[in-house]
Image (tube, rainbow, N blue to C red; front, side, top):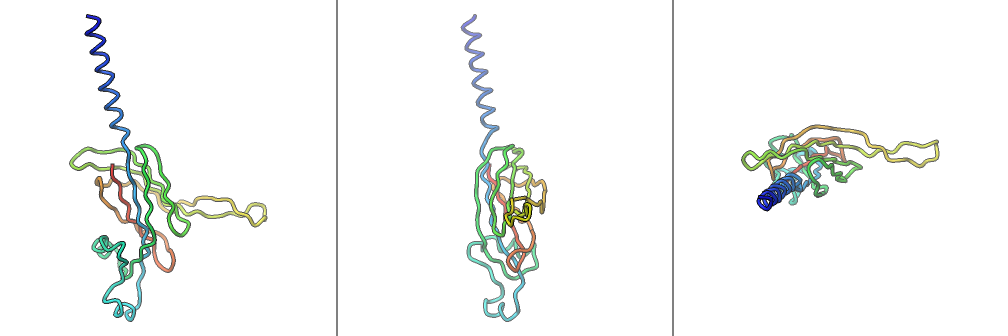
Length: 173
C-alpha cells in the first residue's frame, strides 16, 4: 500500500510541476518603429502616390487605414523575450523606451496575450548645475492591451524626426 501511495504522490508532483512550467512560458515581444508624416504633392508625384519603406510594406494596409499620413519610414526593430509577469524594456529611436509586461495568456482559440504597455521618453535633468544629467523616464503612454497571439497592434505616438512615431507591437507566447 505504501508503494502505491508513493507512486501516486510522485505522479501528482510530476503533473503539478509540469503544469506550472507551462504557465511560465516565454513571450517574444517585437516592436517596429515607424516615422509617419505628410509630404508635398510634388514629392508624392515623384514617388508614385505614397512613400513606404520596403521593411514595413506588409503593414501598409493597416497604416493607411488607421492614419492620415502619406509617408512612412522604417526607423528600427527591437525584439526581446520575457516571461509572464516580467517586464521587458525595448530601446527605441529618439530616446524612447517601450516597456512591455505580459500579464496573462488566454487560451481561447489561437490565444490572446494580455499585457501592460508603457511608452517612456528618456529625459535628462540637470544636477546642481554641473552640466551632467541623470537619466529620468517620462511616461508618454500607459495602456493595457489584449492582443491575439502572434498578432500586431499599431500605436500612434509622439512627434519624432519631422513626423509622428508609430509603433507596430507584436507578441507571441
